[in-house]
Amino acid sequence: MTKRWRVALTVAGCLASSACTYHNTIYNTQRLYEQAERSRRAGRDSLANQLYQEVIRKAAEAYRARPSSDWSGEALFLLGRSRLRLGELFEAHAALLEAEARGPRELRPPIRAYVAAVLAARGEATEAMAIVEEVTAQPLPGPALAEARLVAGQGYLAKGQAERGWWELDRAVDADPAIRVEAGLERLKWAVRRGDRDRARAATDLLLSYPEGGARLTAVGDLLEESLARWGPAATAELLTTASSSSWDREARGRLRLVRARLLSEGGDAAGAEAEAWEVAGTLGDAAAEARIQLALWELDRSEDLADAYAVRRILLPAGAHPGVSDLVDAVGELELYTNIGLGEPLGWFAAAEVARDRLDADYLARGLFLAYADGAPTQPWAPKALLAALEVTSSELDRAWLRGRLEAHDRSPYVLAAHGSSGAGFEALEEELQVRLRELRGR
Image (tube, rainbow, N blue to C red; front, top):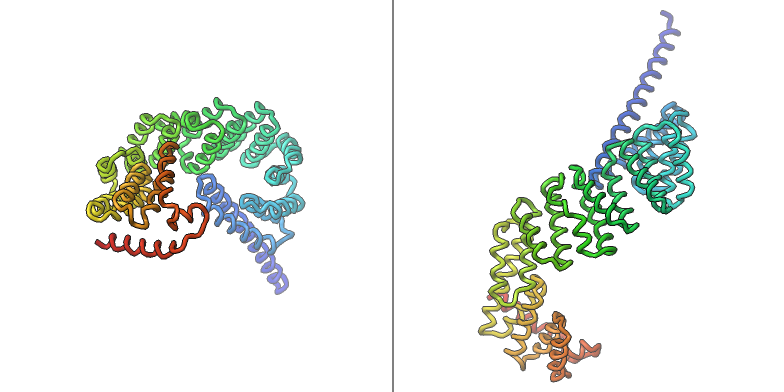
């Protein structure tokens, strides 16, 4: 073989190797994009965003290395989709249009589906829907068809064409079952926004039937907040009737049931709320500990004497290793310590009242303790501060009027003057001295 032919074969081999390397780069970047998509759908947003950034880096490097390659359209398509997921809509649009121009003919319909998604995200609904109608009339791979159907479902629902919108969301799942949770969230969102409680209940039941749905608990919680604002706590709790039999994992299911318990409580069903919370408390994990914290806080909120407040430790101690539980147990211990000090030094009642108000959310107890201090040390300069604090945690207008009457006797107090928007000489000095005395109490 002549030297000339050996050189030619060597060059050909290098070119073939380079092409293979380029193809492998695109292939591996595609796998990375699919991993990012799975992470996004599983609610692992931080990881997904990191992976999308890596896809962008690799795809951009591949495109710059061989912008005229047959695979350059694929590189730009990956780059554009990742930009879309990161919310970089201008850059996503530019990359997708360039991918459409450079890619093979068969790649153009799926690219157009994602162009529609970008336009929809930019609020250009009319243009997005026109593209969707165009591309869904052609054969599309599952993920691209699902993307187009999601855009269509949102678009039709936004225009008031509800039945067509629901149909499109169902067809999105048919096209790619991997997006069923995403489509379910869209169903719930639009059912709430359209005021359709039956569809909202059906959408919630469906989401709860997907084992992977628990990973999107935060997104579900956001939609429940919308439901709460629209329909109130009782109706929103009713959406979660099947939470106890959900296919979600134990922790996510427990957290959702605790959301339902709080909604029931807010809606006036205290018995139902406690029954739900106690069932969660009987399980394991953080949700169980948080249920015990909630049960203890409810008990503290209605406690009318200190013995009831101390007794909440029985609720908390089975989950004592949880940081939130141990903090609450510690606060109850601090309350007991200060109330005992108050028997000999009235300022202990003031310190106990602050613990009840700030650490235990026990306003009724806090009010009683502030008043106990004001009655036990009426001539101390902090008695008006205690009366003002009691006023802040008093809900009854009759009691508030009574407290305002008591404060009239202290109209020259720096604290009363400050509460009325005036400056009172000695306010800072009194506060500093109070903090010194409270620190002394804590050191006992």
